[in-house]
Picture 1 (cartoon, rainbow over the protein chains, first blue to last red):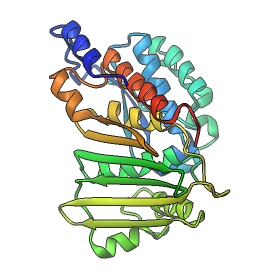
Picture 2 (picture 1 turned 180 degrees about the vertical axis):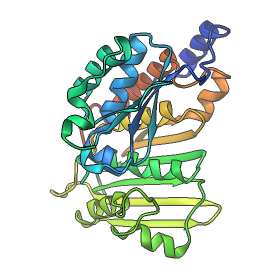
Picture 3 (picture 1 turned 135 degrees about the vertical axis):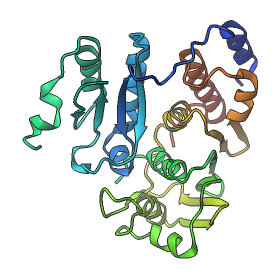
Length: 124
Length: 185
């Protein structure tokens, strides 16, 4: 059995160096729909992939969070990117692979991946 | 329709979160002698009235305003009952809700359990202010993950800190392996 001893070691190591990630106004929010419609369409791996990529690329200014049903169930999994001072971008029918592209193109380089947005679906 | 039972668990636990629960217990028990797989999700959220409990099992009822069907609970109920199993919800307003689903383990229509580790990991690391008690039992072996114990050790270090998050994932994976020896259900 894996014990909690290791957790104590992690605490000792991290004590004092945890930067309190404040949700300030300069932070970009990446929101994944996690209602029944999202989960049934594959939102769970999209959410964890986004979070893993954001962590491994050390994007400390990006917070990945979840929300309920956005009301566009047929386009799930849906990922919204909310950058301060910019229009919301809604990505639809996401997969972990597409999520990686969004992290690299949009979150790192600042270029919206048009082909995955809801407007590319010919709506809105 | 969900493709694996672990997604139903995630979905029902999301209901608990929206019901403002701050402590959610998830119990998964596989009993090969009785040939059952039992999932019990208990929360301390706002709870439901008797009428709401009935409505929650109706696919054409939902509390949300963004659409007018609510399929989460009906999916789970149907998944259990189509194996000859049982499904129940007990709830009281102000106290919380208990959702219980029992499946016939060997039934051909029983959905695979799927990736429970991902479900529990997702719940813990994306809801860092909520406590979870996850218990996994296979016959005479079991393990639990109680985030209240984790919190006691970690103090103000949050569960989504990369090192803590990967410890949680490993803790789930390693202990699961010791309980079920890698057998997939």
